[in-house]
Image (tube, rainbow over all chains, first blue to last red; front, side, top):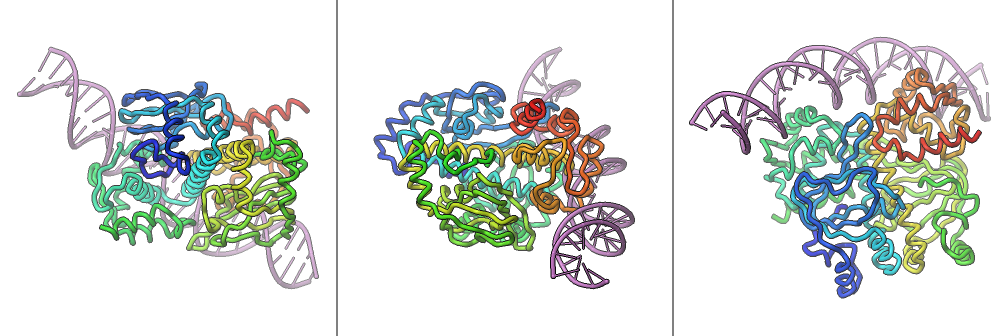
Length: 247
Length: 247
DNA sequence: CGACACTTTGAAGACGATCAACGCCGGTGG
DNA sequence: CCACCGGCGTTGATCGTCTTCAAAGTGTCG
C-alpha cells in the first residue's frame, strides 16, 4: 500500500529479489485494462476474478451499507495493488466497490495467478507477505487514529501522508482529489472537514482552495504526532522531515 | 487472528495442507515459554526476536504514546499468533507492548524461523498470507467501525464477537476480562463504556456485573449491523445466528 | 477491617453530525 | 451572451454524543 510509485511494473516491490527475466515473464501474463474516470472496476458482491496492479490513475475503494452511506476505504495511486487481500483470504465475492477517480490504467491478472505465483516463487510470496503486513500495520494505525484523534488532527495527518506519497513539496502543493473525497476517506462529513481548515491554519497548515501549504513541520508534529503512538517510527513524518532537509 | 481455538498446535491454520509429520517437525523447533499474569512479553522498542503461538491464556497488545495514554490493539486468546506482521514487514523493533492478562503459555520460535519456513514451504506461506489477509480485513473493518459507529454500537459488536470467539452461549455468558480492558480495546473511556450499558439494555443486551445476556439477535442486528457495510458477510453475526439455531 | 482495583454516576464542556442557506464555478441551452 | 443548473465548498445554528473531572459505590484479598 505505502509504496513509492514504481516507475515500471518490473521494479514493483512484489518482484524484488526475483530474477528480472522471471519478473518480466510473470508480468506478461497480465493484460492491460483501461478504466475511465467515473467508471466502476468492480462492485461489492461481484465475484472476484482479478488481481490488479494500478499503473496509472486513481482508484477509489469504498463500501456501502444498507443505509446507503458510503465510506471510502482507500484512494490508490499508480504502483499500488488491488484485490490481494480478498484473494488470499479466499473470498469469492468482493467486499467493496472500486471506481476510477481519474482515467486509469491497470494490469490485470487472474485471481489464481496470484496464488499460483505465490506458491511457485518463494520470493514473491515473501514480498506479498511484506506488503500485506505493511497494509496491516497501516490499517491498525488508522483504527487507532480514528479512535483517538480529532477531525483536525486526522486531516493534518492525511495531508502529510499525501505529501510523502505523491512526493510533493510540503510548502506548496495542490490536492490531488476533491476535498469531499478526503472527508469520506477520513470518515467525517465534508462540513466538518471544511471547518477543520480554520483550526489547521492556527497550527501551521494553510489551505486556500486546492492549494495546501504546510509551513512548519515541527508545529504539526507537535499538534498531531505527539498524540500518535507510533510517533517516532512513523515513516510518513520521518520521510517528510528528510524531504524538507534535502531541499 | 479470527481463528477458532486450535485444540492442538498441529491443527493450527498455519499448518493446513502440510503433511502432519512436517508440521510436527516444524513445531518441535519452538520452545515453550510461560508468561505469568501481569508479566510483560515484550515492549515497544524492544528488538524483535521471536514469533509466538499462544497456546493458553490471554495476551494484551497495546501501544503507548508520548502523553502516556494506552490504547489496546488486540486481546489475544489461545490459538492466535503474535509477531507475524512485524516480522514479515521487516521491522527490527516491536511497535507495541505485549502483556499477559492471564497466566499464559506460548510456543516461541525465532523470527527467522517464520521467514525461513514461509520460504521453504509454499503451503505455509499461503496459510500465513491468508491469516494476514484476514487480519487486514478485520483491521479495516475496525477503522470503519471507529469512524461510523456510536460507543454503544461498538460495544454491542464487540460482545457478539467475544461470543463467537469463545464459543459462548449468547443468552448468558461471563466477560472473559475486565470492562476497563474492553473499553481500552474499543478506544473509549471506561466511563463511556459503563454508560453504554444502559443503552444496550434498551436494545436487548443485558449486562449485570460480569454477566452478559444477548436476548434477541435480530434486535441487535437491527441496532448494530444495519449500519455496518459488511453486514451480510460479517462472519461474526453469521456464526452467532447459526450457533443459536443449533441449540 | 481497611486497602485497592474496578465500576458506576453526576455535571460540565468540547466536539462532530445534521439541517439549512448561500457562494462559487463550469457547462449547457436558449 | 446571458440565464440556468448542478457539483462543490463554506458557514451558521442546533442537538446529541463522548470526554473530563469529581465523587461515591462495589468487590476482593490481605
